[in-house]
Length: 116
Image 1 (tube, helix red, strand yellow):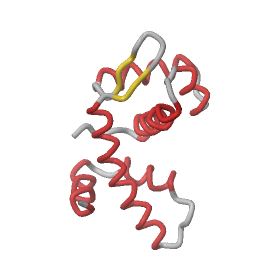
Image 2 (image 1 turned 180 degrees about the vertical axis):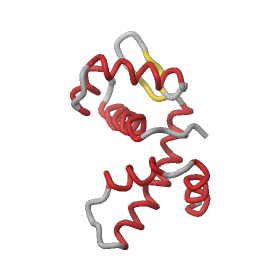
Image 3 (image 1 turned 60 degrees about the horizontal axis):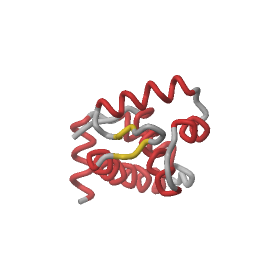
């Protein structure tokens, strides 16, 4: 399993959301996450090196491995949201993301396994 940092996961979630709307360009990502183009290009290079995305001439797309990693993290984020909501925290998407990316790989694996 490829474990992601909070920033990497945020990019991946952003790319997936933008893919649903059509072709994803670096400028779309920059606008969506409010970071500079150099920062976006740097992260896209990192994600491409991890084989989670494919960079094309004018667009970016998730790879099958990227989809699989997002599915894994979706399960963990859902578990974290349920926990936070049980504590009375209603609007907890960002908090759940932070919790999940702060966990050790072993803890994250156990949470995902318990949800399947």
